[in-house]
View 1 (cartoon, one colour):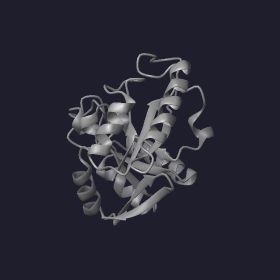
View 2 (cartoon, one colour; view 1 turned 180 degrees about the vertical axis):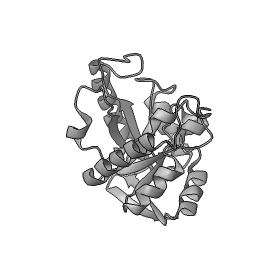
View 3 (cartoon, helix red, strand yellow; view 1 turned 30 degrees about the vertical axis):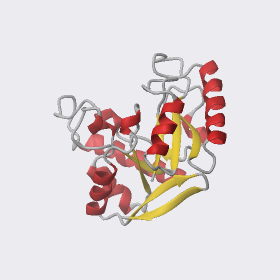
View 4 (cartoon, rainbow, N blue to C red; view 1 turned 90 degrees about the vertical axis):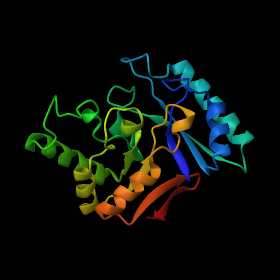
Length: 212
């Protein structure tokens, strides 16, 4: 079991890296992947400063040594549109919360998620992700944090991604220790219903398939 989308107090999380590592080890996880918000010139209240990014890397390196043989620890960054480096240029491994735009649209207050303009934009983005070889993240945080009753991305998007032959991985986008594996079993069951037969699990040696 792995949890590879995890935020700490160095950005907008509630726990220290050490607290999260200890919780992951106690929970029997095999892999813990930190993914601090990369520096942006906007929304600085949630991202890491350049100085904090260096501290973050150093603390992750120390935890890797401390938990060697007990818990595999990975160091990642979450890039977005406003990050210092262009996301596309970085060729991200995992494409996170693909349809984040729907986060506060649970009641359809702001837009119709079945509108052709929206679905066409989603299709175009999926094509770009497929061409880049991205793994699509199934992110359970929308439910944990009370924004929605469904995960990111929507079942319709996941169905289309399956027809493209795309791979998925399940994450919690955890901002506190108790959320590290929230909704994993439910997300796996949903994927199986949609026709997926496996998910990819990220570890220190890369992705490994896990049958559903």
